[in-house]
Length: 145
Image (cartoon, rainbow, N blue to C red; front, side):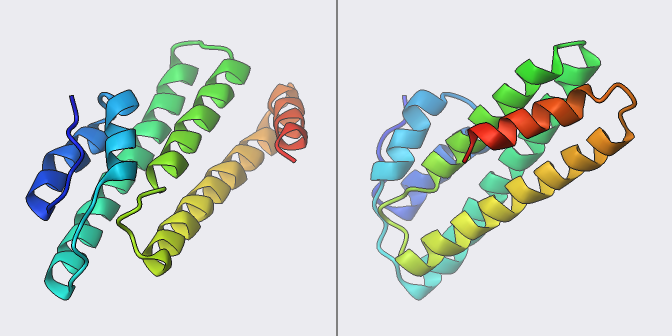
Protein backbone atom coordinates (compact mmCIF):
# COMPACT_ATOMS: atom_id res chain seq x y z
CA UNK A 1 0.00 0.00 0.00
CA UNK A 2 1.38 3.39 -0.98
CA UNK A 3 1.70 5.81 1.86
CA UNK A 4 1.13 9.50 1.11
CA UNK A 5 4.65 10.92 0.85
CA UNK A 6 5.53 14.02 2.85
CA UNK A 7 9.28 14.26 2.45
CA UNK A 8 11.66 13.53 -0.41
CA UNK A 9 12.78 10.14 0.98
CA UNK A 10 9.15 8.97 1.12
CA UNK A 11 8.64 9.89 -2.54
CA UNK A 12 11.37 7.54 -3.79
CA UNK A 13 9.47 4.24 -3.28
CA UNK A 14 6.22 5.82 -4.52
CA UNK A 15 7.90 6.98 -7.74
CA UNK A 16 9.54 3.57 -8.19
CA UNK A 17 6.16 1.88 -7.82
CA UNK A 18 4.61 4.34 -10.29
CA UNK A 19 7.47 3.87 -12.78
CA UNK A 20 6.96 0.11 -12.66
CA UNK A 21 3.21 0.46 -13.25
CA UNK A 22 2.34 -1.33 -10.03
CA UNK A 23 -0.58 -0.61 -7.77
CA UNK A 24 -1.84 2.49 -9.63
CA UNK A 25 -5.12 2.54 -7.72
CA UNK A 26 -3.15 3.40 -4.56
CA UNK A 27 0.02 4.94 -5.97
CA UNK A 28 -1.61 7.67 -8.08
CA UNK A 29 -3.83 9.03 -5.27
CA UNK A 30 -0.78 9.01 -2.97
CA UNK A 31 1.12 11.04 -5.57
CA UNK A 32 -1.79 13.46 -5.95
CA UNK A 33 -2.04 14.01 -2.20
CA UNK A 34 1.68 13.97 -1.46
CA UNK A 35 3.54 16.91 -0.02
CA UNK A 36 7.05 18.15 -0.53
CA UNK A 37 8.96 21.14 0.73
CA UNK A 38 9.96 22.72 -2.58
CA UNK A 39 13.47 24.10 -2.11
CA UNK A 40 16.33 24.29 -4.63
CA UNK A 41 18.15 21.13 -3.55
CA UNK A 42 15.04 18.97 -3.31
CA UNK A 43 13.39 20.45 -6.41
CA UNK A 44 16.17 19.40 -8.79
CA UNK A 45 16.41 15.88 -7.42
CA UNK A 46 12.67 15.41 -7.27
CA UNK A 47 12.10 16.76 -10.79
CA UNK A 48 14.75 14.39 -12.13
CA UNK A 49 13.20 11.34 -10.40
CA UNK A 50 9.71 12.38 -11.41
CA UNK A 51 10.62 12.69 -15.09
CA UNK A 52 12.48 9.38 -14.96
CA UNK A 53 9.34 7.75 -13.53
CA UNK A 54 7.12 9.29 -16.21
CA UNK A 55 9.58 8.30 -18.95
CA UNK A 56 9.58 4.73 -17.65
CA UNK A 57 5.79 4.76 -17.85
CA UNK A 58 5.90 6.10 -21.41
CA UNK A 59 8.20 3.22 -22.33
CA UNK A 60 5.94 0.74 -20.53
CA UNK A 61 2.84 2.07 -22.30
CA UNK A 62 4.49 1.92 -25.71
CA UNK A 63 5.76 -1.59 -25.11
CA UNK A 64 2.35 -2.72 -23.83
CA UNK A 65 0.71 -1.37 -27.00
CA UNK A 66 3.26 -3.13 -29.26
CA UNK A 67 2.89 -6.37 -27.31
CA UNK A 68 -0.90 -6.21 -27.66
CA UNK A 69 -0.50 -6.01 -31.41
CA UNK A 70 2.01 -8.88 -31.43
CA UNK A 71 -0.37 -10.95 -29.30
CA UNK A 72 -3.18 -10.43 -31.79
CA UNK A 73 -5.33 -8.27 -29.52
CA UNK A 74 -7.79 -6.29 -31.65
CA UNK A 75 -6.40 -2.84 -32.46
CA UNK A 76 -9.53 -1.12 -31.13
CA UNK A 77 -9.01 -2.76 -27.74
CA UNK A 78 -5.31 -1.87 -27.76
CA UNK A 79 -6.13 1.78 -28.57
CA UNK A 80 -8.62 1.94 -25.69
CA UNK A 81 -5.98 0.57 -23.33
CA UNK A 82 -3.46 3.10 -24.65
CA UNK A 83 -5.90 5.93 -23.95
CA UNK A 84 -6.59 4.61 -20.43
CA UNK A 85 -2.86 4.39 -19.77
CA UNK A 86 -2.26 7.94 -20.97
CA UNK A 87 -5.19 9.22 -18.91
CA UNK A 88 -3.63 7.61 -15.83
CA UNK A 89 -0.44 9.55 -16.47
CA UNK A 90 -2.38 12.79 -16.63
CA UNK A 91 -4.09 11.90 -13.33
CA UNK A 92 -0.70 11.22 -11.79
CA UNK A 93 0.50 14.64 -12.91
CA UNK A 94 -2.16 16.28 -10.72
CA UNK A 95 0.15 16.53 -7.72
CA UNK A 96 -0.54 19.20 -5.12
CA UNK A 97 3.12 19.40 -4.22
CA UNK A 98 4.18 20.63 -7.65
CA UNK A 99 4.36 24.37 -8.17
CA UNK A 100 2.11 25.46 -11.05
CA UNK A 101 5.03 26.10 -13.40
CA UNK A 102 6.43 22.57 -12.93
CA UNK A 103 2.97 21.00 -13.11
CA UNK A 104 2.32 22.80 -16.40
CA UNK A 105 5.70 21.70 -17.79
CA UNK A 106 4.91 18.08 -16.88
CA UNK A 107 1.46 18.27 -18.44
CA UNK A 108 2.92 19.88 -21.56
CA UNK A 109 5.37 16.98 -21.81
CA UNK A 110 2.49 14.52 -21.41
CA UNK A 111 0.57 16.27 -24.18
CA UNK A 112 3.64 16.27 -26.44
CA UNK A 113 4.19 12.55 -25.87
CA UNK A 114 0.52 11.82 -26.53
CA UNK A 115 0.74 13.83 -29.76
CA UNK A 116 3.93 12.00 -30.80
CA UNK A 117 2.17 8.67 -30.22
CA UNK A 118 -0.86 9.86 -32.20
CA UNK A 119 1.40 11.02 -35.04
CA UNK A 120 3.09 7.61 -35.13
CA UNK A 121 -0.31 5.89 -35.20
CA UNK A 122 -1.48 8.12 -38.04
CA UNK A 123 1.68 7.30 -39.99
CA UNK A 124 0.99 3.60 -39.45
CA UNK A 125 -2.59 4.13 -40.58
CA UNK A 126 -1.37 5.66 -43.85
CA UNK A 127 0.64 2.51 -44.48
CA UNK A 128 -2.17 0.12 -43.50
CA UNK A 129 -3.69 -1.21 -46.74
CA UNK A 130 -6.81 -2.46 -44.94
CA UNK A 131 -7.76 1.05 -43.78
CA UNK A 132 -8.95 -0.36 -40.44
CA UNK A 133 -6.52 1.68 -38.34
CA UNK A 134 -7.46 4.90 -40.14
CA UNK A 135 -11.16 4.33 -39.43
CA UNK A 136 -10.47 3.56 -35.75
CA UNK A 137 -8.27 6.62 -35.34
CA UNK A 138 -10.87 8.91 -36.92
CA UNK A 139 -13.54 7.45 -34.64
CA UNK A 140 -11.22 7.81 -31.64
CA UNK A 141 -10.37 11.44 -32.49
CA UNK A 142 -14.01 12.29 -33.09
CA UNK A 143 -14.95 10.88 -29.67
CA UNK A 144 -12.29 12.88 -27.83
CA UNK A 145 -13.61 16.28 -28.92
